[in-house]
Image (cartoon, rainbow, N blue to C red; front, side, top):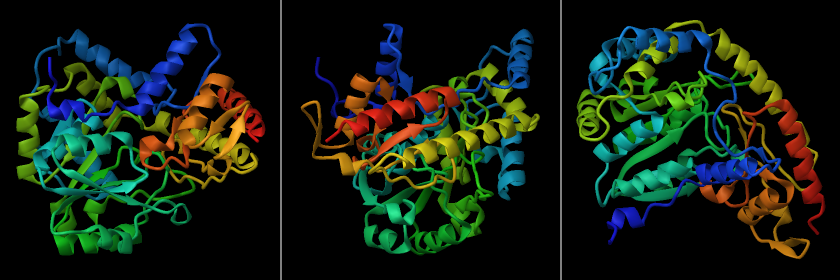
Length: 397
């Protein structure tokens, strides 16, 4: 049976593939330390689980409105006003089966064949595939390590053509942890408004910030930018709810309607019980989030200190999310027990097979000089994993 062309062009998610391989090795009894997966290792807070149990006991097990319950959409509206200074109506909110689903809906209703989408690299793995699935052409714009992997105005202007339809911005960033400042976003926004370029602003790591940094939504900078922006967010990262699969988008009314209409013919509504839990996440106590942040900050500082002690490894300090993105290119062209390391993919394979450490090579994010390490795991595993990495790298000559 022949597959459709769009199916033939899909690349599997490297992060999920590596996580699956690591878990298979663990199931075989191997002692693998997994730095690959992008989810908090904390349990979902109890008050959120209690809200789900209550909803289940009350019989909230039927279809809801396609774009989400009124209660959850109002909680999201309130969240945007309180946290971001953004005014939306409930009809501008579309709740989906995770932020990845929200992104997919947005690309599908905004892009068509012939459109170009500016994609700053390093980028999250699914952006590239979702752009291609929408029939658009990704225009990958490499950013610079010395500029904290943030797109500059000059780089943006050089990438714009008459076919440019859209840009994807992600702050805080996966995989780099970079955080755009208000001034940086305002400068980019001025160019985007001038050219009428639509913005998808992925803000899923909004709550995971360190060093007193401020999260700024580009949509909040001016009415003109708000009209050009689809904001993507969700409960997965901030509330340790990755498996609950609730994401949401805020968009101009026509875009929100199109996204809801598309969703009505694909998944229909997100899970009713997970929606009830998400109301509790957004409106209930934020203390578990604050405790998680303190621990993430402690882990980040420890991991950063240890990784910087490894000869030949460069790593910038991330301002958000829960990843380090070190440059390991100084090891390329060298060998480990007869195996030549040509790129980060080779190094990742070597680390998994020889050191039993799983991480994601930078090729998944558009730059194979780097590796991504998640510190969403215990301090004990972080310490053991970094010892293994340092020992293996010491053997590369």
